[in-house]
Image 1 (tube, rainbow, N blue to C red):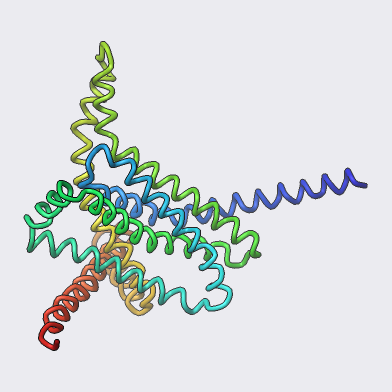
Image 2 (image 1 turned 120 degrees about the vertical axis):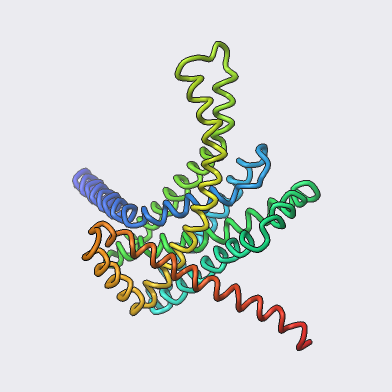
Length: 303
């Protein structure tokens, strides 16, 4: 009897693990889009850091990301169980913040093109420690919002399951996404070092030499592309959160995309919603930046 009970228990555990693996795979597929944006945003955050400090900065942000998810997983389960109506407003607050940060970067680039580079260079020389701390804090703050969306999407996948299943799937997604994203970020920021290493090996020639030279050429260009992609991702993710939360805007965007695709190219129906959401995010973020500028000018006068 004891042997049969043990076998039954092991069978139940195996079944549970299979279910968890299946639900985790489904949740991972649904969060894949956000994962790409997460990767672009976090790779962007390391730009401007000295080469010898890139990996320590990535590791610091990764640890912060683990802490974010340690907070978000139980918080999401608690809010979903007790106050599910708060999930959308909280996500929308995070979305508007992402749009605000993206708009700030655009405004600085357009109207203060030299100043950020000069200030960043001075910060690196005069007080590199504080500069890195600011970079890490900003990256962790952005990661919190993206992690929240990943957790909420994953929670929606297992909403009908019991608490054990929900906690297991969310935990697996949280750990896997964090390791995946920051592992790739670490690889991206060290591509140039990998290229140098390949070229410095004795008797380098053929494929190894070509690969090393290619990495040295590609790495700086890739970082520039990711810097732009990261800003665009802020508007895509932030705008996407806002439009999904604002149901009438979401319906209008989908209807407009369908109408345009019907009279032009059918594939536009899949791309236009993201483009229009990003545009909406740019408008919303710029509005917040302008309101902040106006408030900053009014405040001294009133005091």
